[in-house]
Length: 261
Image 1 (cartoon, rainbow, N blue to C red):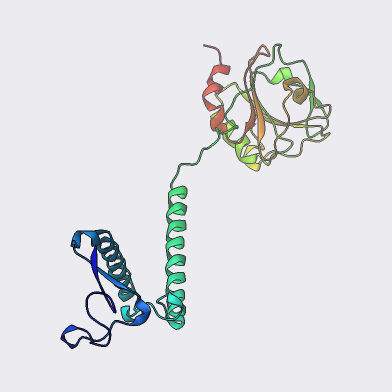
Image 2: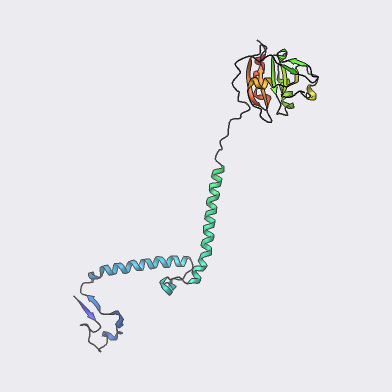
């Protein structure tokens, strides 16, 4: 058992508390003091936990500028409305700053990643025709017919969708002696004119192919800004076909193969 106070066995009614201590408030009810203090261990542990939570809460309140003495006020929240409002803007600013930093980090990391690049198509050779170049007649700037086989061996450039004056000039400079450079405009009745630097070159020809016979023979589509290059030996055999040639470098090494040993 234990001893009770406030009209219990501890002291009598009206005699006052021992040592002139103030009376215990009646709303507290009977107070029981156990003979064994260990009986209060559970309550003591609960009190310690509450004190620990209070100290931890007060610590964070001080960090955010809230006075610990204000805890427990209106509504038991411990936070005054104006203090909560004062915290809202700094917290929003911190959140936005963290998000912006994370986005920047991801953006930098992503931009540093090597981007996959496709292999350049201009230098990719196409399957070679399984038969020799047919005996076609092309048209020169005077309207006369020119048998294409009379110009072999040759580097033939189909240039209907290409402003290829520089490539024609470079091919003429790279071609070995005895190899013609023939620029052909498919589907046209007039070939136009050679670049001025090649106007008097005997090994360079600008011809028209009204029936697009060579284009149909290689069976590759046109590509704007590039020529279709085919290297043809003296017997009409096509040894290299480049559907999209934007530079003589894509077939320069093969020009020497057009000349016999």
